[in-house]
Image (cartoon, rainbow, N blue to C red; front, side):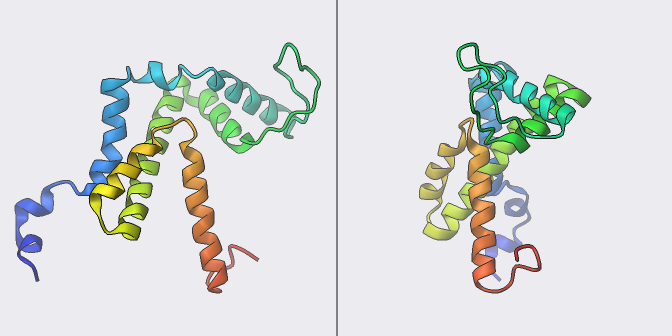
Length: 165
């Protein structure tokens, strides 16, 4: 065993993954004015409203419901599942839940991207620099890409555990 695993002080220090998880939270709530920044995107409102429409009608809209200039035109709700989650959270716990969940998704994505980059590169500096790219409104896509990439790799090895056909 190495000396670092026996040292109790080193065992209680946060890992680089912990750092990658906490840094977006610190950045959002210290450097970017917190909830004001997360809710400052104009898309938040229509994500909630689209999710509410889906919950009340039981289907994904195929016509634009919100535009002044394109009302009734063909529309693709690419993020319909996230819209439903946002609407459900908003109905049960309000805007605070949207802020908390968004911050957690950003932090989780940051930690997952760090772990992946560190595993591939072996260099924590390279990995932490890639982690900084995840503090964007579309970071849920990173989680989805990582998840489906892992599912695809598992399926090609024949170990999908019944998850994929």
